[in-house]
Length: 307
Image (cartoon, rainbow, N blue to C red):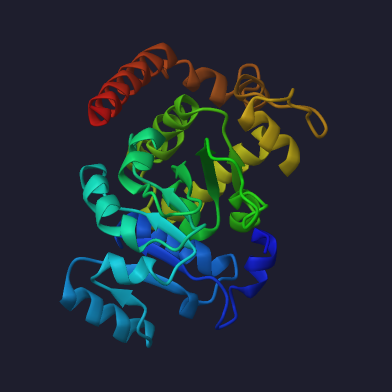
């Protein structure tokens, strides 16, 4: 059975099941994303450490899909997502190794934990085939947007003849495979962590709007549209071209003229106008240096987590 065929079966009682180990922020985002992808709630198994939380969630979902035992969850699943914190991954992997379904796909969403360690902790002699991926999606997948990069060094086996890229694809979310773990680590810092970095910048921009005596209601109303307008101008390629740009495996082919942040600034800044007079007070060099420092600290932290 191919992965695409099994995707069709996900809504069947006899189809493969999916486990999400850890129901924190990323686990919740992934759960919502899988529902958007068409996976039925009854075919998903969630785990958390608190029996009280599991009981409350089962009442909330109106069905028994939340467990406190990882072993029970994975024993029913063909696809296992590890969504616990990095310092818990080894414990969870060793706990579930003997209960994994043969030929299952394991996808770890824990930052910094390399494939070699996952293989060591998960592989057992009697398991026919185990395909392991690493991933670091944006938490915005809960809204069906962002990126969902994947890396594996496993060969696709006969049972799963199609990459999870197709299984996980949904509308505006860009799902793609990267060529190395180094690329995945780069995306972890630049994109996954980047949401927090950009949120802090936009918070400063939002708060400064009070200097214009703008109400919070008005600022809330226009901020999202302003950011969306900027990104609509910048991102003018179609989805396929965007994948190529992210992968770095092909030249970006613009759909129409390609805008850059510099060209957008120039278009908005009419000579002698308000934007030209005021935007020069934004110290872009200082902001860039700050980001370089942020990336350096993030990279050091990621490296320390690997040890």
